[in-house]
Image (cartoon, rainbow, N blue to C red; front, side, top):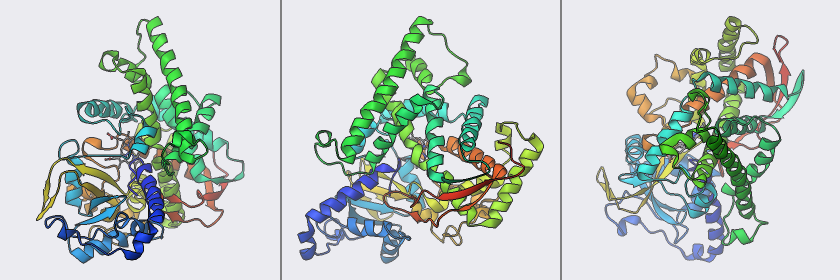
Length: 499
Ligand code: HEM
């Protein structure tokens, strides 16, 4: 569930299951312990079974098609938007209160900081943006925003357009069956590699991708102690794969450094710089190779699952809502009519897709790819009549807010029209409820890029193809949100489509 980077909580989920099994006998004798006895001023709640707490209840909820009751029932029981529980081995305060969530996001680096288990930190690398703090984080975050937050640049739009079309060209003609999630992952991976090291899809990207997939699996596995000595475990294989992916990136970075020395530090056009070039020039060229490797690797990891699942679920929701699909098609057919059939999409085209943005917002709201974020209190935090003590873990649930009927009418229904410009969701209050990309100092630096990629993908999909589900598929939430079968669809090329 948490899953900024989707993985961490899932690992914890699984580790906690294991722990739970080992301590099964305790369950029999355990009694519920109200947390209030231990600390009168913590938000109300129960800490459940000894050691295991309420972890198994949380996991069970997320294994059903409707995980909401875990949070909703506790919020209703205590009559407050925050409650205390005990999950993944720690007392944790859960927040379903949008105001408190915003406060937590804004307080990153001051009253709170984000924290990950060491198994995740090892896979990410010590210099990953997700792990750095303080001034170093500020500098790296702004550098990432500079690079990723520029999807308006013509070369980047052109890369996205080309990569999406190249993937679609590999689909059969006139008909094909594909697992949409796999295709979306190819696009996302190839695009990120292009941005990081300016390498087009080919043998190098394929060999790195093979290892990379094993690395990603590691985030969803049980991190056994001494896993590096157990290469047959998923986590052990992920550690090996990390070495290989890091090795491949290191080689490219070293080569670039040599070239830079040979060329006397000549720079390319600002717009065409890739991330490595950006890093080589940043801060007087003081980043070490290992810092650059970890940094690139963390970017490769952070946007992969999220963007791919967003693409897949947008298509699934549209398929299940034919009126929305018809309106989306009309929007994109109009763009094509104006542009002509072979013209690549430009920034101005992206800016004339208002209904597409409603579809993306609504997919983000309903799907909650990142259901919330974990933080740790750096100091005692006062909220309403409660005090959350220094050191306590806090989970800000975005999902609980996004699916709350007080904020969104028929909250569980996919209704892209709710985001149309005259709607109150466009107001400042509406915007403060909607945090699919987090906020504050750790606001996702890929937020605009993800939107652009999905918009371009939808454009080419609806203007070139029609489709139906090849098999029934459903959304699952454990260990992360995705569809069970990767959404297999039967595609047919539209007779008027351009290959
Ligand atoms: C639908 C797509 C995406 C969603 C829903 C999403 C969501 C998020 C969220 C909620 C956070 C904040 C985590 C926190 O506060 O602890 C975050 C952080 C981050 N995201 Fe994304 N993200 C998406 C796509 C991307 C893409 C495409 C990239 C880059 C290629 C990316 C890179 C990052 C990085 C590097 C961070 C860490 C920022 C930091 O700690 O300073 N994300 N993302």
